[in-house]
Length: 306
Image (cartoon, rainbow, N blue to C red; front, side, top):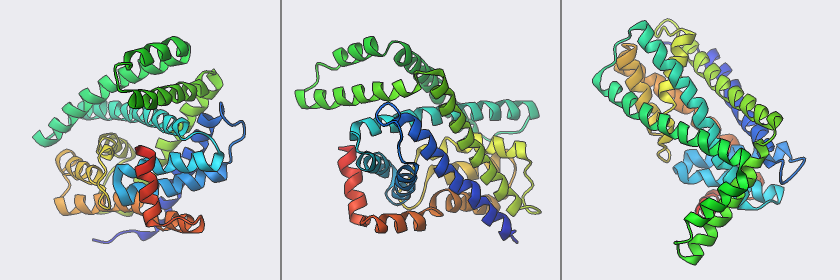
């Protein structure tokens, strides 16, 4: 198997571009608390945060909000709320891509094996329900934030006092975060950055497909279909391994596109290396520059999520 290594290097450009796009989107979330957030600070925290995710799994998700709260001098609960908003918009984008993928599969009459059919049926139902709930929540909070906040706080008053106060602070911070999308301009900007994020991911996948040209023939539409299905695998993240992304990628390639198992495994491995591992040396370098080490990153993740 001969790879076109130049395309692998080119694929790094959109990969690193996704981190800049995320920093720009997070700056919009920060506007209600800070009029002019530092893109440099957001970019550094984003890169270190995704490095922590690769090393520690989903527990590393909370490193980025914590670092941003420290760098920008805003409450950490507000940045955890911004992280929730980011996840919501990513979920909406993933659902749109999956919807396109499903229509293309049905239109082309591609065969789905039993394993893949189960994954799609289960994932489609869950994400469909989540998207409806998320859209209802966003619209409610955007236009009726105070009444919704009062109802949510009233609904959790049965909790112990310490737990109630913690969740109350998170709800208040989340409502403040949603206020960043209250204006039509801000909402359109967040949506534009979300589209940019997923366009860069698609560009990375397309460059990777070019690296396998001659041994793996995937059109750009095939890549979008593939990305739509694989987006669900990213929900599961195993520290140092990656997990669901590779498993789903192999299933889609072998059962949907008829790719040999060894070739599908190599392609899935390269996706993981590009989208997860490539940022680690940069993130560790930035962390060391800021006086952070392995132990401190793990401690930050535990404290922020506690």
